[in-house]
Amino acid sequence: MVYHILCEVQPGREEALDRFLCDKMKKFWLAQPGVSRFHVFGDHLANKLERIVTIEVGTFGNLDKILILDERKALRSELMQLATGVTSRILEIIE
Image 1 (spheres, one colour):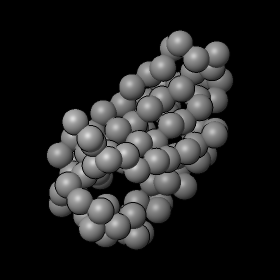
Image 2 (tube, one colour):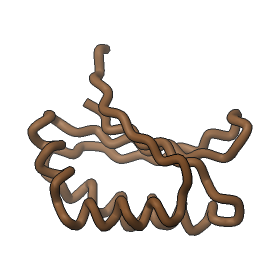
Image 3 (cartoon, helix red, strand yellow):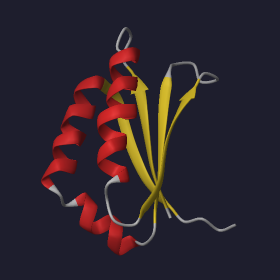
C-alpha cells in the first residue's frame, strides 16, 4: 500500500519544505516498521508548485500504528506550517 500526501507549496517556501520533507520526514518514516520506500516528487505541470510524497507501507496495521504516534502528529503540524492544501490518501497497489 502507498500513503500518498499532496502539498501545495507556499510561494518562497519551496526550499524550506523540501528540506523538511527530504530530511526530517524521510528519516522518521523510514525508521518505522513496515515502511520500505519514501519518495518526494515535484509536480511542475500543475498551475501551482506541488510536492507529492509517496510512502510504501507493508500493511494497514503498520500504517495505523504509525499514524497514532505523537512524533508523526508533530511532523504533520510542522508540515501544515510549511505547505498549504495538504491532502492525503491511502492507495492500494493493484499491479
